Length: 332
Image (cartoon, rainbow, N blue to C red; front, side):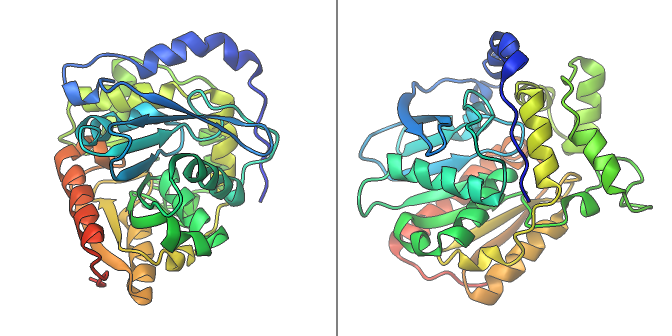
């Protein structure tokens, strides 16, 4: 499955607006961009320039955060601010997202894998390993990397966290649209129209109410909803639509079996975009291979690291400590 990513074109006109959306200030301090960043230059073989940033001590243990569809580095602000004091925190804008450019190759699982491999080349010293944390499409990126480069898993990763992600059948299982897939099957053309049309997303109170009811948990705060909505709105409409069309057909069932390091899978109990069924399927694959460290269901919607920031960070800390001790993963 190949989906050609569009050139930036008219999207460049709105670049200052999109940057402003990502850098808004909130009363909830952890959502704000606080830690100073070091820019790590990464250019892919096909000419895409990836925005890669590093935070914290240069000699610290490395954590690489990989964001999901329509997001950017700033999506990880709660984790960057929590971990950068003690660890070397790396985050990057996926191709076409944030300030990363499109390059010339089409979107597919191998492109996701190659870009992550290029980032790891740039941020890891020889023999160094990192904890990889992926949310949504970021979790798919890690699975794609493990499928394409299984020999790199044990040499570059010490542990993995897969958060509210999937491996296949995304449009067939999503319940983000009322009734569809809850009561009647959603036709693929509907998902293409809803998510694959390159239209700017509006803001305002009504949009926040819809986002809270369909993407978050009922207890999500106004700041959490506003932050998540602003990050998604900051994505170029052309890139958001093109990548969505590719994700609708993505199939990496079984790829998680190649994650031969302690791996934690985190699901959101109220996730309608990628319901818990997806995470459980991945966890079952990992359990069969012997590398599922923990399967955790948090009381959140899709934005699990924002809605349950403390619990999410605690799980990342726990898994890093276990990997540091050299513990063997136990299915559970």
